[in-house]
Image (cartoon, rainbow, N blue to C red; front, side, top):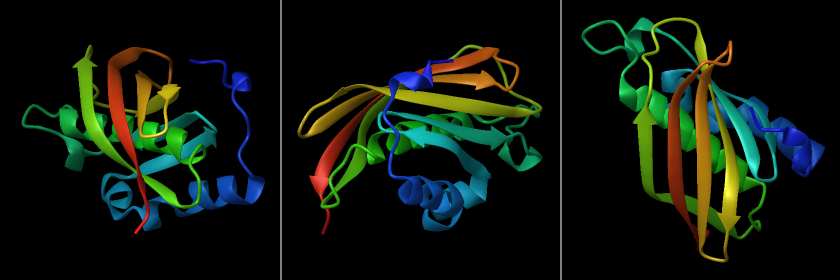
Amino acid sequence: MIANDDYEEIAPNFKSALIKKAPSVHPFWGLLGMQLKDVKKGWAVVRLAFDPKLTQGDGIAHGGAIFSAADASVAMALIGMLARSETLVTLEMKINYLKPFSSGAILAEAHIAHKGSRTCLGEVSVMTETGELIAKALATYMIIPKK
């Protein structure tokens, strides 16, 4: 895990709203059961509990579910660094799966490695709740004006 003490806190009301409302503001989160566990400027953790509805044919979590948690964690790490007039979209993402996930929950912990005026690079470690590394991801986001 990353030492999250290195990251600046976001406004307490904003943080509380993000954590509480993430599954309703982002319906896809609710569909998968993702939860925002913690967030700071440039750092975030998203939790995804194993559920049989997330499996592929052999009963292990589908890679797309793990990918989704990793993608969501980068978005949350970046969101506290944006101006109110900005939003974000994923440009590109790569993930390396290291071990299967078939019980318990995973934590996708992201940090922003670089933020420019138009793009951002985020790195993610996806681990079991006991700290076993199951995937690593790298994501590029575009920062765009809200419409």
